[in-house]
Image (cartoon, rainbow, N blue to C red; front, side, top):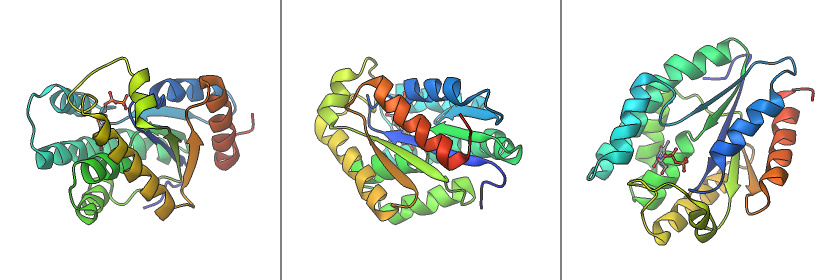
Length: 207
Ligand code: TYD
């Protein structure tokens, strides 16, 4: 499936990479330039997604398989209710986390077979792939030191988050035409400026 007349961007990275602050800043910088900008996030973005998010992050115990399926269920609803309608209107959709999070976390770090995760990703999204994926890359120890919140997944140890990072970097080298790797150890302003420029150029938003 393609993004139609819209443009679909995903932002990925480990904990503390700055994805949510960046998404907010991108909305402010890219709006009012003639194209609708929709910023959303996974898991969440729908009522069902918000409920699943609470289960995922607050449950004391969850099997790895249940975790993967819950992320995919939230993703399927989010695609139908938010992402596809917005792309259909011709919007630029910026999504904080998407299918690569499942590859990096559930396969890279939890060890579930990568082909199986890819198959479930395809099923949940009806095969909708981003036009562009920004990977905010930084060492796990830098990300974890910046982090302010603690939940079931973010409180995993440093080795887990290093595996997540490796999962992302492997994915980026497998699909270099979709990924742009951005050095997220730099200041927030520098990262925001760079990513704004990349999206504006690729999505044809005239700043
Ligand atoms: P969130 O509070 O959004 O974390 P962050 O601000 O770091 O993005 O919580 C989402 C958590 O869910 C985060 O730890 C990553 C994890 N996650 C997965 O493990 N697999 C997935 O497919 C998705 C979308 C998120």
